[in-house]
Figure 1: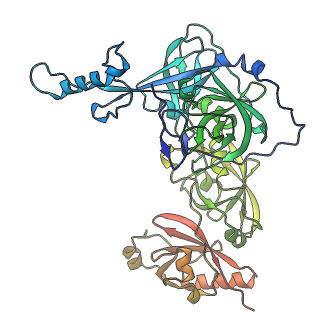
Figure 2: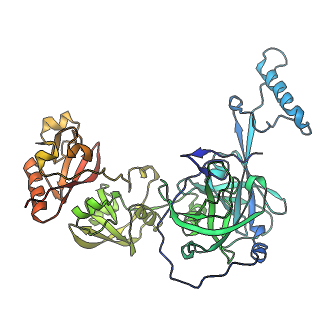
Figure 3: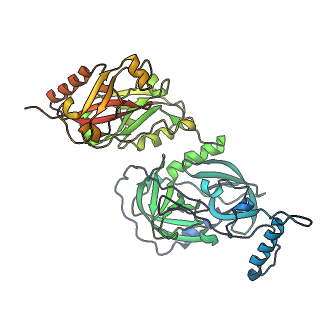
Length: 503
């Protein structure tokens, strides 16, 4: 019964039967506190926790044409010596391939894999990773007394890689209790318990190595630890020294598949709300703001008069969405959400997702250099909109430029013929980019023929002269960067352009 693993994007590996994504978030720094001395032993801490951790076994029926020679099919009788199993399998396969009397189809092979989990409710609710149980035909749980119970999947969330199971034991089970991962500090002791390589009840200890790790997941907010965790640890708990669950072990960074002291866990601060939603609804219901955002680069910060690069720049708002209804507009920089500062773009989606649907929250924005607080009533995020909502790419870097000619841009007023030629909406207003000279500043910036400049310095433009006027105003104000809102392929983004000061 193998602990399957699979490599995604280099050496980041899932710990269970499939692959995991690593993540991060910026968490508030705790106030200084007296350092705890290293414990002489973890025995007293671990003893009452062992019964709360379980082994999760999954089974998937693989089509007979996908056999990879690993594991044994269900058709093999018990008791066959190891040295004869391959021969017996070949015999069965040959029988299935032959036609005529007596031929039988080759057996469908069942693939089994192991992971970990922990009990959060004495009535049999168990937390594990989504990738441990995803696609499984059957799920079972082994308790520490070796009792095996069938489990049903209550719900799963691919975005955070969490899942909730339910078993019927006929009696109350030993349950864990949640801790507050926001209180963890880098250097604090943590203990992991799980089922690495099928070795149930394995205990390892280490420290919190880092917080806020992120490599591409939408809601990434992982804790990093040097406690040894391996394949099969997926879904197992990470405890603090008070015996509380502060993380769910999910991924390792490893070129070999084994532990090298870099493991990652979903923090309890995120996991609790996800699990509560799965338990109540069977799915995760997230708050929705209805904005498409991008990173605030230093150049954009200068052009937007922010002083420093921080916050989330609104590239566009969803028509009819909560943000638009409340008055948030493209070009606003969201610097605070519900009383929490937004340091980086990636923080905002997590904040919004974890906020209750229907709650009215204060959103502080910077608009044309001035702060403004807007009250927004959040809606519910449709998961199909995830790729389009609250995501974006930073504009590419480019050197400074002097004026429209030096930018290498050809501009034109939008006409009906041009709208038709470039497949643009008939009601779209702006200035069309008709030419981008190779190796010009505009080319290096990433502007393309067919782009439509909608705003410059958050002011609408309708003629090429409007663009020139705004660039000149930027210079007169003593600023070296102008910001252009462009539309390309139905999506909008802000692009910073350097303007040369005259003097």
